[in-house]
Length: 96
Image (cartoon, rainbow, N blue to C red):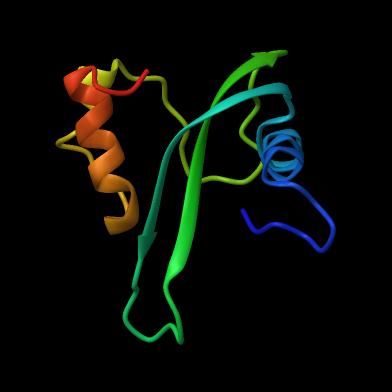
């Protein structure tokens, strides 16, 4: 999700997880960061990924489908282009 004015990346992530999955997140260290240029967007998007622990049972409040998968099973799935390198690293065990 997007970071709101005056909000840290960690606070934005915790808020998004609460709004979209109805869980409380304990946001840990940043594990990966990238930028990606999408066609039709005026500038590159910066994405930061963090390790999180969650409290509560996730509820799908915002998505067509939510599923838990082992990291090794992620690469053939249809991820956004900006997420694909992280998915490859997760599957290889390079990022935990």
